[in-house]
Image (tube, rainbow, N blue to C red; front, side, top):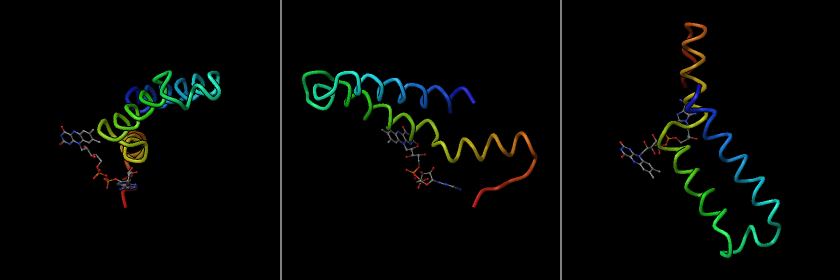
Length: 67
Ligand SMILES: Cc1cc2nc3c(=O)[nH]c(=O)nc-3n(C[C@H](O)[C@H](O)[C@H](O)COP(=O)(O)OP(=O)(O)OC[C@H]3O[C@@H](n4cnc5c(N)ncnc54)[C@H](O)[C@@H]3O)c2cc1C
């Protein structure tokens, strides 16, 4: 649950920072988008939201919902 949520929160923070910076948030002047791209990689290789959710769901309910 920690692995699932910490990447979600990190991406949310990066999105907020990008918004605060306005136009500067999408240029290369500030490296916010680079952090967002890095975080999307982490979200993939540390386990996607879908797979984390399926694993947690199985642990909580004892039922497998994997397709
Ligand atoms: C930068 C980077 C570094 C990596 N380094 C390594 C490494 O060192 N060693 C290594 O072994 N691998 C590594 N990987 C691979 C990584 O582990 C896989 O990319 C990851 O497990 C996702 O697998 P996939 O890319 O095949 O996507 P898929 O498994 O094809 O997933 C694609 C989409 O389908 C969803 N999905 C998959 N299965 C289900 C399901 N049953 N139900 C619902 N939705 C589902 C996923 O959530 C995702 O959104 C790396 C990947 C990246 C991006």
